[in-house]
Figure (cartoon, rainbow, N blue to C red):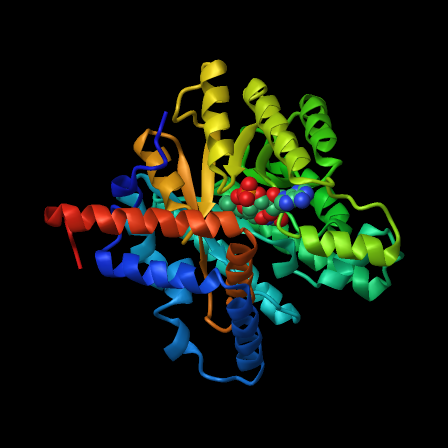
Length: 394
Ligand SMILES: Cc1cc2nc3c(=O)[nH]c(=O)nc-3n(C[C@H](O)[C@H](O)[C@H](O)COP(=O)(O)OP(=O)(O)OC[C@H]3O[C@@H](n4cnc5c(N)ncnc54)[C@H](O)[C@@H]3O)c2cc1C
């Protein structure tokens, strides 16, 4: 059983000065007021085209992102690779609105797959449907509103982009994850992902659907997909997460007067997450699983369940994943014990990944316990290095 307390392993690729920087960063994001003001400032700065590089490049951006381009991110990929951690290159530019920008996002993802074919330190490609098409269109398609002919053509172009990505992923044998988003656009996304899985997962899981276990309906959906898959002759792939849009989901449900699709409390989400893991491990011959979490207990539970089901640590269909800049103590210690671990490595032009960075800062503020944990572990490692000077780096 790995000890997530082993900070020597957790921070083995970090210099002492990088650790100090990370410590200051987590101290900053711990303060909700500072994050609120900082987010407002950054948002305004982006809108006003204010040069941000000087302020961010060495702080938030360097901590949470690989670089502005794929080429710039190669050092990060290699550095994770040294510790048997693979990278999931995530073109995290958000807010695209034009067809040109959506085509460009598709091309970036295709380039990631090309690179992954050569570079075995890249484990998966990933994309978000709202990076390939307009949010409003997904919303309209989700409530099955009649799409005008121009919208139908626009929607078809989104589907074509997704097919191009999955086709290349299939040809080059690079698995691709598709992120889950807000429930009111997810209906349209679900149906496209199901079609993609049926087409490209005939031989083995190439396309991975994401399930947010904070949603009341997702356990049932998971079980149904797995039960129906053999009739359609494919193996589904899943990334399971708890879900990132809880507050928005609840507010919308209140505003529009429908029952919230989210469990009423954290315990229910946790138990759905555990049940999803249990079900997936028991059916691992039929599917592939990536566990996307920063929760130590969930990872320990997964390890127990794997043992119970006689599944080896590096089972080819089981992966763990965390985001770059978060929970290195989980990633590095799991990788050390031989589990398959990948880090999401977001990259993209600084200005366009700003919404992603703001979300990370806000998430670290709202997950107060987690930031406290990061601070505690960094402090512990700094102390350990002080007491054993031979391991100090600068
Ligand atoms: C590799 C990776 C990929 C990800 N991809 C996606 C994605 O595609 N789509 C997406 O939406 N998110 C994604 N996430 C984010 C994820 O959904 C969580 O928001 C985040 O990981 C925090 O959950 P946790 O399991 O790490 O930790 P925890 O701290 O244990 O859980 C926090 C989560 O629990 C849930 N929760 C908290 N309080 C309550 C409550 N009162 N009632 C009900 N539920 C509650 C919420 O989902 C909250 O985010 C991803 C995360 C990772 C690590």
